Image 1 (cartoon, one colour):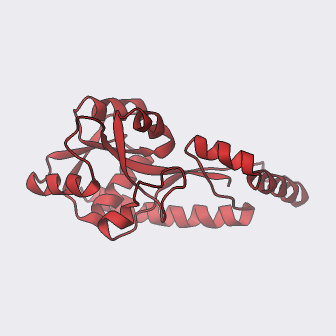
Image 2 (cartoon, rainbow, N blue to C red):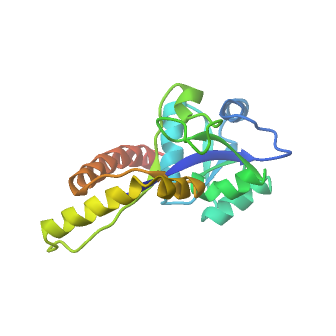
Length: 202
């Protein structure tokens, strides 16, 4: 595993009515079930949205609008108040003030977005969610080859220039070797199963 694409919650940028996650939750409280959050059905955004609802208690409605571009368009156009998407995919619109990232779904603030709080800071409960990037190889690959490859990847990640480039793309370096990746996948599967159970209740 080499990186995480941390998810962020974003609202409309200049001209929008919402400036913080608290304001979004307040609007949802005033109009239960009417305030939408744009997601893609069956994607991590749907699971992340439900995880946020579970932890925050916000009465938000998950709205299936499609892929990342469609989610951005729905928020920029004022059709849906908020969305959840990888921060890397939101950065361009955020820098252009088309959307505003109001919180990141990570256990700490991101170095390249130091002024954006975590979900935990905003609601008092951590909701960490990210897409992960990893290398996979055929199962018959010799352990010696895997070890050599992992060492080379780890060394590349420790290069300051490489890290700087990753940050510029909105990507968080997160190295795990083969065993660590296996553990991470198992942990993620368990967490997704729990969230999936709450989705089935809807």
